[in-house]
Every structure is written in C-alpha cells, then in structure tokens.
Image 1 (tube, rainbow, N blue to C red):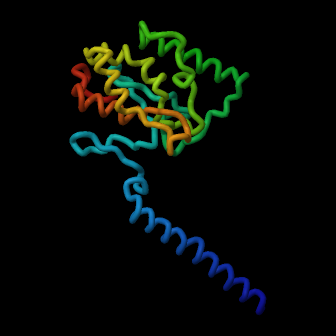
Image 2 (cartoon, rainbow, N blue to C red; image 1 turned 90 degrees about the horizontal axis):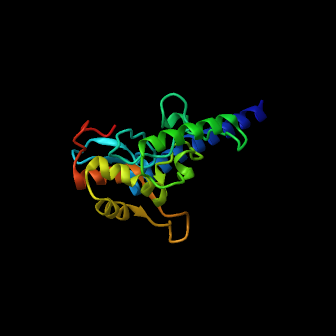
Image 3 (cartoon, one colour; image 1 turned 120 degrees about the horizontal axis):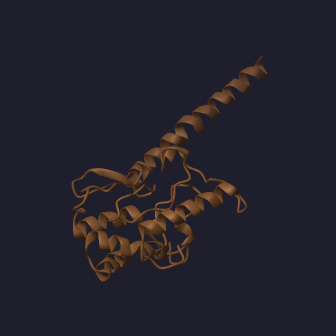
Length: 200
C-alpha cells in the first residue's frame, strides 16, 4: 500500500508538472514574447478583416491572383486539420494522374507561359499546406496575372521582387514568396480585380 501511495503521488506530481504547469508556462511566454506567432500568424486585409494565416496556403481560383501549390488534403482543400503529405511514391499511378491533371489545368489557365511547368506547381508539399512558392514558381504565373489585372509585366515583377523572402539567417532554406502576402500586395498596389471583385 505504501508503494502504491508513493506511485500515485509521483504520477500526480508528474501530471501537474508536465500536463498543467509546463504548458501554462510555455503558453504564457509565447503570448508575452511572440503574440502574433502564438495566435496563428493571422493576416488581415486593408479593412482589418482576417483573410488567412501566413503559415497555411489557400486556394486562389481568380486569374488575377497567384496560386499556391496543390493541397494534399482530401475534400476541403488546404484544410489545416488534414495536414500531411499525400505519401504518393514516385511510381504511384495516383500521383501520375494528379500531375497530369494539374499540368492540363495550369496550361489551360496560363496560355503563353514558359515551359516547362515548375514541379512545385503540380505536386503538394510535405505538409500539403505550404503557403510558399519559389520565385520561379511565381514568375511562371506572372503573365496570366498581368493580363487579368491589365498591368505591364514589369510593374508586376516589381511587386514580386518586393515580396521575395531571403534565406533564414542568410543560409537556411531557399528564397521564397508567400502567396497570400503577395496577393494582398497586388490588391494594395493595383486594387481588387474588376471582374468578380473577390479573391476567390
């Protein structure tokens, strides 16, 4: 019985320490030191309305907006609760069919774009929710966006260049562009698209 009581005390102490005190401490420090990141890195438009998170990709179907990588989620695309890769192997028939379908869609939506289509535009990221593209993946779509917004490619390129994020600490990762932030920058620079008037 004495051993059982000691075991219960140890379990209760461990539970309180690791299940209550530690999470509260970490949550409190995060709210104090990094409140924007701790609350989901939510992005607002010019009107102060939350339009998404800087950390999660989202679908843009309007031709005046740049599009993210495909989502690996089933059903509702870019569902943060369905985060995860597709796990399709290089010999997967489903992967091949998906890539062929994406290639066909992209070529129809982007007439006149250079070939080949960047691989990142036809494959999902490891999380299935990546909000970033390489500068090359963005520029491949630029002609379509410039035509839809009735602006010159040079003016669009200036906005793209301003939104390229460098490597972290100067050497980690690759240069990248957050597609949601870029699309919001387009709206600030050129206004909402006349046709449709929305981001979807």
